[in-house]
Length: 396
Ligand code: PMP
Ligand code: GLU
Image (cartoon, rainbow, N blue to C red; front, side, top):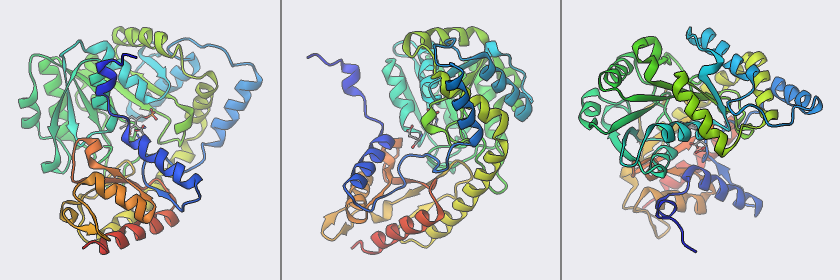
């Protein structure tokens, strides 16, 4: 069988692969702790479940409009008005099967073969692969030297006449960085100056800690509105990863194309999950606040425990639910005779030795680093990080 060059070039999602491996070891009865995929361990809010049950009973089990049921698109508009003061109408909103396909569809509507998209690295695993699936060219701008917030001079240098879009992800996966006002202003103005579309992935916007503040870029650079696609969803803040609901907001012309493209791919997101998301957006605000507080405590715990470890160094995360750390000092050592020459080897040996699943930095385009997700109970964080410490102490 002929497999396309496109498919052969594609790397599988490392975050999902690590999680699948952890789950299969667990099924074999191994005492695995997974700090792999970033997904809240909390149950979905009761309001989401109630709305889903009612939807099923009332026969809301058919195709919906491709862009989503009007009730959900209206709730999304209300949310953006209430939380960010932004005025959108349902015609500006497309509901998708998670934020992930919406980013893919946005890229599909924006880039032709050979067009470039700016990606700030370390970056979430799927951006680069999605760009490549449309034969686009990801142009990577490294943020490692500036606490994972892009430096505008570096970004400007990376712009060419073929730059069609930049993906901004704040709070950031995998680094936990929260972009400051100045950085976002500069990026927004550069986008306007060069006519570059901003894909503003703010799926972790509710998860910021301490004195960190999340900024909506359109409140800082309103003139970028016609160039901005906002991407958000219920997966992270509402602990609803499995329902697969995300939403995108943007100029109605672009959103029309996006909706049409989605119509040929998934038709529409699950009708039941859409109703569950209406329930979440209408009634789960207190659940979100409670979970945010729990994540804040978990972040403090994870940071405290990580500080006690040999060989690792990191910038304290201020948002999302990840700690991103350098293992450069551990490379070249070995664990019980097994060499640790790369971040991938580090993660593989750690999983086999201590049954702790973490994601190698290479998957985020930055080798020599590792990401853990602390979206787990405090008990699991203590146990898992205890194992990590033990592993590091046993390196020779
Ligand atoms: N963007 C980022 C930065 C993410 O970490 C994720 C992870 N799931 C997504 C988008 C996609 O989220 P969803 O589950 O809504 O597809
Ligand atoms: N976004 C989460 C992560 O980075 C979930 C898995 C995925 O969609 O990649 O782990």
